[in-house]
Length: 332
Image (cartoon, rainbow, N blue to C red; front, side, top):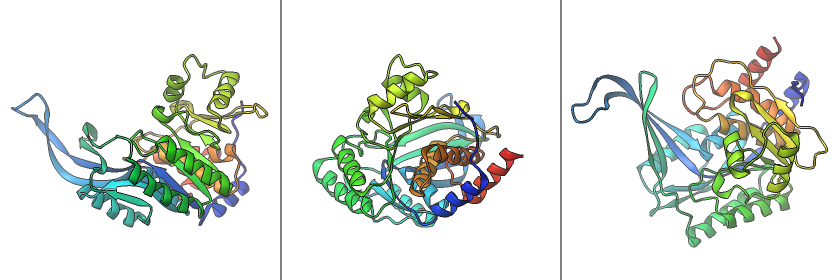
């Protein structure tokens, strides 16, 4: 396994090539709401802190955060998923508009609430998270409508991302249709999976689980064994496994074994908040592949972007300028 950084001229060329690339992002669209304040006493009603809220923030989460990262790095994105006909759906659309994201790929369903995660934060610490969602599989009629939107978007795209949070959108039939459309177009596909549909992404260019997800899906796997990791990629029937290891960095594993696994060390920076770091990695991998980069180059650049994202509070986006600054700091 190797740990080396791509040359600066190559990085510059790939960042330039990413500008204007069209990335279709399909999956679970979420609204991340933050209620921020202070706490000085315990409630007389129950042994819980009383938080006096002084600030409200609403940010794009899940697949929407991936799409926002694509726009921030200079690409364009079509976000494909479902939201509710509710207040949170309206807030999400407003956040999309601020991020420069069109809502043409969203399906609004009156019977299904917008997936929303509300985090109550006091003195810089999360006190509680409240989830509002319906994670049941999409019914046939909205599934057919979303499938049509996906096929239209993929026909215009340079890469396709599947962002799966097990919220009922990425059902096997939709995954198959989207994958077939991407293969017909000849564009790369990047999958951020969850266990429920772990083995549904046959043919994906890059499959990006974390350590826990892969261990649960493939019991007995030795994550330190190149042979075991290549066998897992073969079992999943994906071209490359991009295994994220948290503080251990990430490793690129080709399915066919023709290349040795490539270890990418985590960058030593102050970590403020890891929320959304995986979304940042997914967006940058897809954009780099769309720009003509290799999977190893995509992982290297995404690792730089993630090192920036974790220094920010909550889910956040990363610009090319910030990636270049991280690159220079790494070289120093």
